[in-house]
Length: 525
Image (cartoon, rainbow, N blue to C red; front, side, top):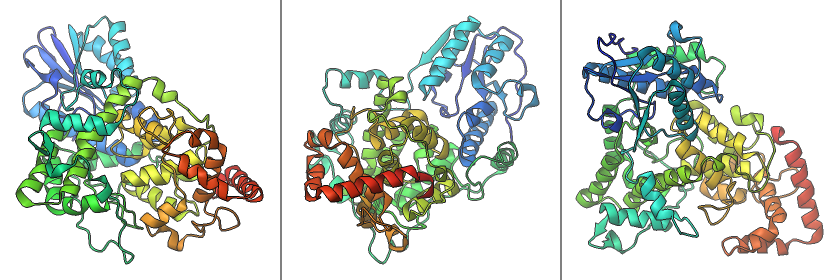
């Protein structure tokens, strides 16, 4: 249910604390030194945040349900909470968050507006502009949910010619004493990534324990009905909704993962298989990105599983690297490179996103499965995002901004600080290698090796030309051909383009013609 309304303050409001939808924890620094007698919380549901992009229904539902649960938690704890609900007819004329905030500031007239750092550059600018226009001083506090502050990351990055996650990760391990044996890493090496690239056996993945699933309670059911009614034409399904939307559920999801799934996570974290949407992954990114669970708790639980239960170090380290390494690193990169990251387009790609990115109706089996599960659950794991939907977007020369908007819209865990650098920087190389050493590209044979998708596909992953040529393979070779000079100059990609020398002039011309045909008919592949 929507949080109960808060009575008006009898005295002038000293501090109005704005809590955003991805800041849902009682440790929010903007709530520190809160005095219920003279302070209040403001939470805003804004339909404009759901329609700015064509958001997946499950993404809208996750945010609204988690926000309503947290708003009720604040009210139950005795903190006055002004909750502006999406379906409150009194606010219908004000669809955007800035508009609703401006109206709230005029209505409540606080002496100051307090805010934890937002997770999106645009929102930070909008809130600052509204507060300035209203003449209300704005106090923005460091987001203590993260283990590395923006300022700390900026100090690490200063003066470095290259930003590489591995070196940052090692520093974080030392600084926070994670998986350390004195000054040395536990197990004698920092990174067990080489042990974490297995595909499933030829017979398939076998039995995998299901991830934690939470039956919608009354509040979530109310939200689901609201989303179905208010956003009926948006993509995605809600029939399978079972994401954690409270801190208690997030803790249960963590414990279930550590007990049942972490042991095999490392080995198969890159593997894909038809109708196996979750594999051995944790699915904790939703809870983490909404701040329902502390990353320190997640790291401690994984580390304890190795020390106390003997879970494989390769699995535990690989998982912790995603939390303490990549997650913290990518946030630091985002805030140093915005707003330029939003418009970066290193290769100058301008093709429109194919329509089937919203439907999954393509002949490519890998895309059918990845996009199909994305529409069903609002989820795909990192290799599906990087090496299936992301890689194809790069090879097909899609405009990075359209691709990034799609990723932000369709995944339940998408907040821009994590989504944009992963897409623009990692998947699309749109920033020209600011923090990655090469474009992540491969032919369809990589997908064949890491999945079963190619077995029943109409395309053949080893064919780059002809009627059965795999579009991923054709466009991979076309990418090498188009960017041969640039790729040959880098030691990380020189070997790939060297393979072009095996092709005769006639074969290269046939490849170019096949690629031109594929690119001209992307909606029909």
